[in-house]
Image 1 (spheres, rainbow, N blue to C red):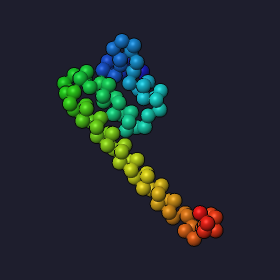
Image 2 (image 1 turned 45 degrees about the horizontal axis):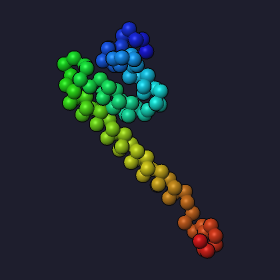
Image 3 (image 1 turned 30 degrees about the vertical axis):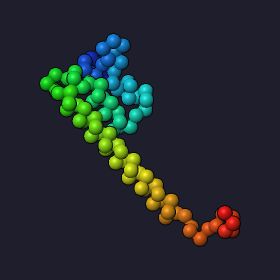
Image 4 (image 1 turned 90 degrees about the vertical axis):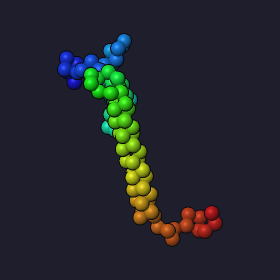
Length: 94
């Protein structure tokens, strides 16, 4: 990403760390990374209320929670569909 085109509100005040560098370094998912970006820039983007950025961050965290919930359901369904319920690991002794 070209830092010349990056708005100042995406760069830290003292160490000049860019939001995308934090997200990349922590290997965050899209939704978590987007939430972090909104929180890092909250109160810094002109004509953009802090409350709006916080709400956007919360929305993306909720999207991530929903994704995790669906993944858990899908994982459980996969296990149930691919497990032989008649199989007994210890011939019924466990």
